[in-house]
Figure 1 (tube, rainbow, N blue to C red):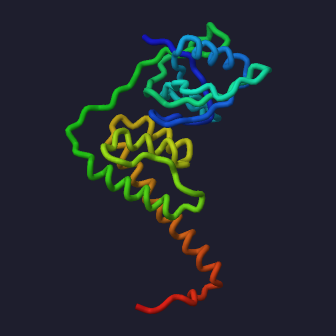
Figure 2 (figure 1 turned 90 degrees about the vertical axis):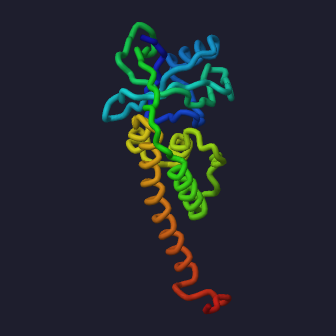
Figure 3 (figure 1 turned 30 degrees about the horizontal axis):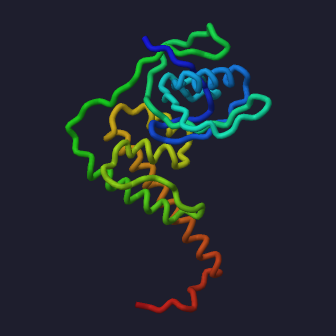
Length: 210
């Protein structure tokens, strides 16, 4: 059974999604330096007051952004492969996990239409958002689209974890579609409320009936 270094953290990393990390604990500085030297990956698992989850994602270090004089590091990682955590070993300063890598369930389901619906909903979310555009590649073919969206949209941690654990892209896209629909409708309501407040409830002067 494969063994990989573990980094339990209050985040959910998705395959293909980037994430910056500030490494300051001694044990994790050692872990990251070993991964940099060996060009190997480490596993990230959600850990919070609910405990450590048993499904996580490996992290590939794509850039050492900065190394401070005190040994702290800022790195950019990208999610690589989902895994199931079967056992935690404690022989090193940091945790090591015995893991089983997870593959998607095979299916003959045509999810291209579902993917296009999710892309259209994502465009609605971006248009309605006030924070600016979300940098997500949405050109076909939509490979791992569910992870691309869930890795960058600010869904809550439990929701992101549920998406990570779903065993098929079709199932994940259905969940993402549901979440994007709720998000788009809420953002559009909020945007309309702000626009109404800015005009004190009155119509703009340039508005003409059709």
